[in-house]
Amino acid sequence: MKRLLLLLPSTSYRAADFLDAAERLGIEVVVGSNERQALESVVPGKTITLDFTDLKESAERAVAFAKDSPLDAVVSADEDAIVLAAMISEALSLPHNPVSAAAAAKDKHRLREILTAASVPTPPSQIFSIDDPPETLSQKVVYPCVLKPTFLSASRGVIRANHPDEFVAAFYRLGRILKEPEVKHLGGTAAKQILVEDFIPGKEVALEGLLQNGYLSILALFDKPDPLDGPFFEETIYVTPSRLPASVQEAISECTGRAAAALGLKEGPIHAELRVNERGPLIIELAARSIGGICSRALRFGVGLTLEEIILRHALGLPIESLERERPAAGVMMIPIPAAGILTGYQGVEEAKKVPGIEDVKIMIHRRQKIIPLPEGRRYLGFIFARAPRPEEAESALREAHRKLKFEIAPFKLKSEE
Ligand code: ADP
Ligand code: CA
Image 1 (cartoon, helix red, strand yellow):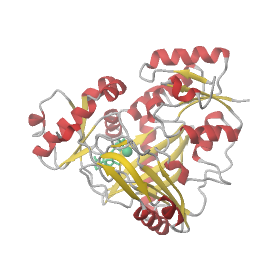
Image 2: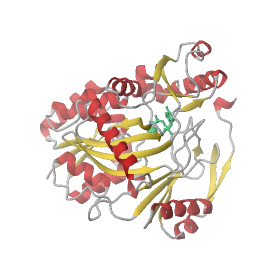
Image 3: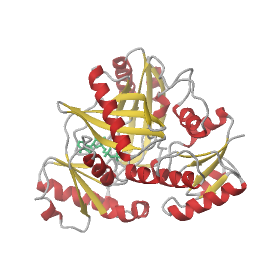
């Protein structure tokens, strides 16, 4: 039986989908997580505790573990452990991304530098320290601009500024996020940096791909039909196949392929986000992981394979019969967070599920839990999934289902608003 080390941060949304995939493939999983208790109950006796911020020590620990229990593959379910996965794989001579490529994909500043040097279109950017005086910096940037952390994900801390006053306010607000203890611990020195980019107008798409020996296969190209113009960038609807003209889709694939090659990524999933305008596509993000949240549930390949099964099969060198997505259109909505507060109740899930084309509605935040909108927030309120013959039908099903949902939220004051 093949044995896989799955690196799974305790906050990951991806646990169930990867563990289910492993079960269907009949492989043994060892979970490497940063919190032991969190996963002991799911996979008793098959966990190792690894500090994802101490790469060297964690890699040594995993390699020592592999001496007694040989590993056939190492996969990181999420962004946080992709560099560690590459390091362990390298030490065990398993196929993997070069450590430097994984590290570059994880660092938005490094990503911009590499893409710019390789003439792959990407926003012009500058890196600043959170200790710099924003009043001075505000004179050095082009407006509108976007301020962001270099290492977080899910649009956390990403803020648009249209003029110097907004820049200064955004700089302090992002500075406070970067000083939150958990963020500071995760980021290390990167938590001292703020990346500022030109705001690129245009339509946005997300591309799921799989690299095999450096060759990029496109698994799905999603349109994001809701405008993402800021000041915060909450993701909502993703629909595939894309309705962009074939020539534009080709330009997107080509641009993503060049970006992955420039970084030196070679193996495994990639998740890219691009903006497309009259000048063509630009890379906003290129991550060496699969799509976040539980969005991957919108995708099915060949005779019903999930994205996680494809990722695990590839990592283990097992045959993948087809990377072709099923024929119907599919969509997912990350349910927008209506307000900050405590979730006291919600209604309409059953009605939403009855909307034609809707496959599932999952609310992820429990009653009496806090809900925090962007830019501070980091948790999803929930997801709606749709499948329909055509993408516009999947999109309207998602919108109609969303209208059936009602959330009751008791307000509380966010620290940053005081
Ligand atoms: P994260 O990795 O946290 O998702 P991103 O860099 O992908 O951060 O930014 C989140 C979103 O913010 C993007 O999907 C996009 O909508 C918007 N965005 C980020 N940078 C820019 C930019 N330079 N121009 C326009 N929009 C941007
Ligand atoms: Ca993103």
